[in-house]
Image 1: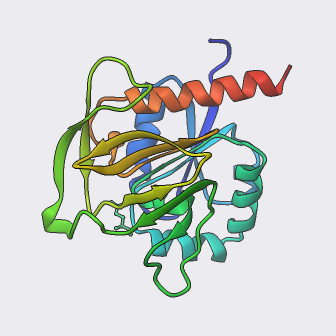
Image 2 (image 1 turned 120 degrees about the vertical axis):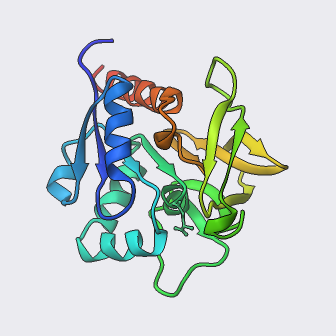
Length: 202
Ligand code: GLN
């Protein structure tokens, strides 16, 4: 790999620090993104877990929603975990009032589908494109994907429900690899960013 890609973590709310650590361990230069000028400087972006309604409202308030949509449309690699997966859905089944998404993946997501906070669980999940056996999936009030459109590829299922999806340069998981110390999913994302940056500079 040549120079390490610069990957931002949207730092409005949620588990930002854990993603910064995971990205750095996976070989990226990682930094928090709160302003449009910071967004403009990154090669890729992580949308963390947290609370998608809050993240959505803060993104509008901070003037980030349109710049985020524009960069995702332009092909910037983006990875959403849990609330971040919800942010990448073209459609949410049960949005709270005023809740918007960035979109980018042709999928319908159901919020809190796996149950409440006290029904959070861990499970081994086989993810297409991640070598070396299943990853430990941490599911916290996690969404699942009800259905995907033709352009989206299902990367993993748990209990018959879709929990990881990729469409082009957009990746989303219902679970939180940033909480496990196993950085293979972040490694996959760092590779996506690297490939995009290399192709872009040709
Ligand atoms: N249920 C949360 C939401 O709707 C997501 C939970 C999480 O990110 N751990 O945003």
